[in-house]
Length: 143
Image (cartoon, rainbow, N blue to C red; front, side, top):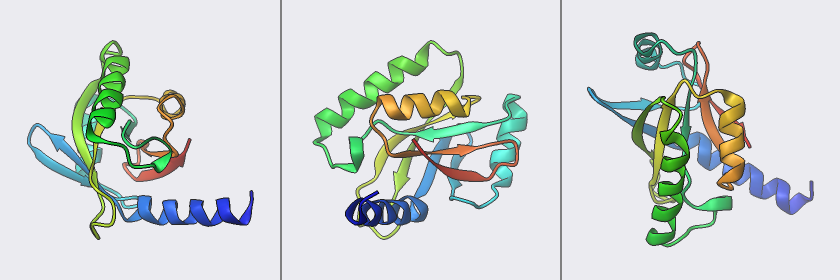
């Protein structure tokens, strides 16, 4: 990896790690933070009978800001790809608490396998996504 690409990845990783991943659960917002155990997420996994979940967006492919209509079309395509899977899907937002990056519309997908999430992230040109296994610790996964 070139020094420039390495520096870019470090910047992106720092941004992704400081982001708060807000899931709009039916009983109110659930906040996920990278590498921090989330008891509420663990309860959601148990309630839904799943061993893992994913937080994914189709916004801003390659971490390049896009116009609202382009992001909306990409997100609608992701919605359609997931609709047939029969999984529990809740809306969400990836929010930069420092406000350096605009909030991104996202989806929380309960029960989506890591491999399937990586494939979708690649298809929608995302550098990374958030995956939580049975331990309910959201982790950053590079696609």
